[in-house]
Every structure is written in structure tokens, then in C-alpha cells.
Image 1 (cartoon, rainbow, N blue to C red):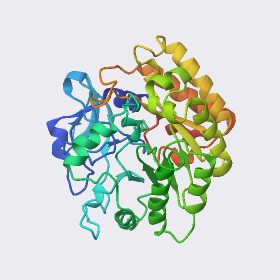
Image 2: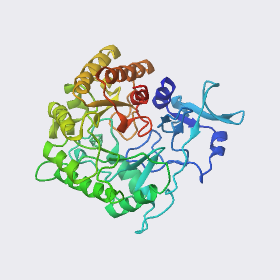
Image 3: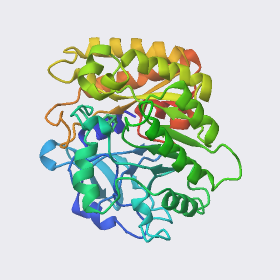
Image 4: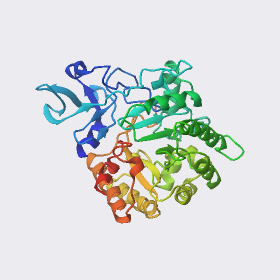
Length: 390
Ligand code: SF4
């Protein structure tokens, strides 16, 4: 996990020899994501890496001048190296069978849904309404990315439910490949009650996906805005959704207001937390979570100046949520070129190791499982990689 964290923190560069190993018929090359990447391009390199124990490293190619790890070939094996030292053998993700197929409307299925080793990703919409008055989260590049890469590729701002139904149906034909379906999109503030339109659209997409199943509930995760109880009850009752995540991003009220001004304006930190806790009554303990952008609490100039203080404060807040049945998971903060925080630096490796251990220990203390977001289903959270030990 330490190696995984640092590879995510520093990124990777594929050597010429590593690129020669790629077989586009077998390996999953980078496909359009809802968020941008550290190299701000969609190069035909492997999507990400797999370690020998089945852990994924979700990682972007990174320009050489930023000192990334190298993915190279040594003695005929694909390996991760640093400063000339071979650290670990790795593998590329294998390409799902549906990837190059088209829906009946002629859209390439990997422009409708994408994949991780065991998860189907659905990005129903690439727009976030917090950006309308320039209040998008400061680490996020979603709308800049939409205008550049996704528009260039001809990916619609909103996915058509029929296309999603067909792409998921095709993906599920591959035996043993997928264990869950994850949906995420930007926030949509519109509606009689704020976010009603976002909820309506998710219901439409989830019902289209659900038409592929004979049972009411299917393994799934929605990563969306903090909805009211009424909205959550609709999502739970009218669809097959089985878990719900709404990201606080940073576990400190003042920093939340600075880092996530749109979320602060429309919901507010305390209400966001309360909605998470109330969601446990609807989805059940262990089926509700919040993501944080690990390390963004040290962003300059308003963040913590000491990593020690940042860690203490973050874990205290996390304990409050975890003790109330809400999972807290982190992803490694990568300052992306399309984001407001593009020139910032993420904290030390040691910080992330302690954050991963701290969150895992809290889950152990409160006996909270995180199966819907673990190393198989997600693979992007060093702390939930440890959840296999629970
Ligand atoms: S809510 Fe924040 S993180 Fe999510 S898409 Fe909008 S700006 Fe980005």
C-alpha cells in the first residue's frame, strides 16, 4: 500500500519498452473519464496498473520532469522502478469485451460507460452546476475537462438512458468480470427543491440499468450530492441502488467553505454531515460513505501548515462520521492542471500512510465494513485496500 500511495502521489511514466508490451486487443488503454488527468491529454497508454495481490493503482501518466515512477521492462517482466531500482512487478488492466462495441444509436460503448478491473463506471453527466457562478471545488477540473477533452471526443454532456442500458447489458455478458456498477456526475442544483433534477436523472439512469436485472436491488454505488431524506428515499425505493456516497472532500468546516464554495453555498458543511448520517437510516450501516481528497486540507494559503495538526483534525472528524455508521475513504490528492489548485503540492508520503492506517483503524474500532468501496470494487482508496483485513 505504501508503494501504491507513492505511485499515485508521484504518477508514472511508461518507457518505450513498456509501451511495446501493450496489445490494444488485450489491454485497456486510457478511456475518457469524467475528471481530467495530470498530463491533460488522452494518450494511448495503459489505463492503470495492477499489483500482484489484485490491488489496482489508479494512476495518470505524468511528465518526466515531475519525477514520476517508471513503468519499464526488465528481464522480460513489466516492473515499477524508481532511480534505477526495480521495486515490483505490475500488470496492465485487461480490456473488457464491450469496449469497442457500439450501442444501437451508434455510440461507442466506452464513451457511455468505462471500466475498472471489476467495476462498471457510469458518468451520466459531465457538467457541474457549482461552476456556473465559479464555485466549483478548488481541486476539481470537471467542467474544464468537459469543455476540452470530452467535447472533442463528441461525448454528450448527458448520457442517454437507452445507451447506458445497452452498454451495461453488453458489459454484463462477460462472465466473472464485474462485481458492481458505480455512477457519478457533477451536481445539478436545479429543481423545485435544489437537486431535484439531479435526483430525477439518476432515477432514470438507474432504472435503465436495473432493467438488466431480474431482482430489485443490484450491487451499485451512487456518488452524488448530499440529498434530502425525501430525495434519498426516492432513490432507494424507485431504483435498485444499494449504496450511497456523498463527498465532503475535506473534514473541516472552514476549509470546506474555502475548498468547496458551491457545496457550502447550497448545502453547508454541518447539513452535509447530517444528511450523511441520516442516509444510514435509509441505505443501512456500511452502505453510506463520504470521500475526502486526502491532503487538500494542507492546501495553501488557508490549509493546515502542519501535517500533524491536519491529520489529527481529519481523523477526529472521521471518527465522528464512522462512529455514526458513515464510511470515510480518501483518494490521493493530485493537483490537476485544469483545477484552481493546479500549482499546489500534495503532502508527504508519510502523511498518506498515516491517514490510510488511521481510517482503517477507525473502521476496525467501530466494526464498519466498506464492501461497496473496497479494493475489488473501487481500488482507488489506500485505506479501503486495507479493509480486506477486516
Ligand atoms: S461537486 Fe465539486 S468535485 Fe464534484 S464535480 Fe462539482 S466541483 Fe467537481
